[in-house]
Image (cartoon, rainbow, N blue to C red; front, side, top):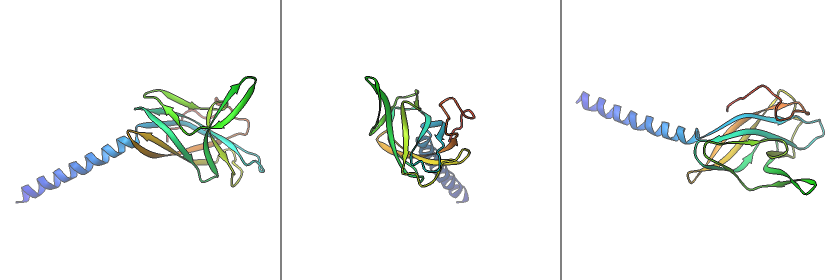
Length: 160
């Protein structure tokens, strides 16, 4: 009787562990590195957030949010001789390719900021990623860099 109980307990534990690993695997299908936000001056109400996103399977970035203010996915690109910025509803994340959100390209636009973003602070950002028919929310912590920071500035890659 005790052997059957142990076998049943072991089987239940295996099922629970498998389910946990499967759900963890689903969350781990997108890696984010080098997440950062450009610092602001005290009266500034907007800034950009940048990062590298690497999907293990085809995915799509379908939304962003942050408690520091409103957040939208934007694209900057040249149209004729003018640099234009516009909101985009989604961004494809092709399988096993790095997609860089960077100054002058795709980025997370942070608007209506509640306070100044100072170098050394961190900004929580939630990415909404559609993958395999499900939308997964992935938390990212972005380091605030100097006001004059460019894509190459910073302290290397930080995965979150």
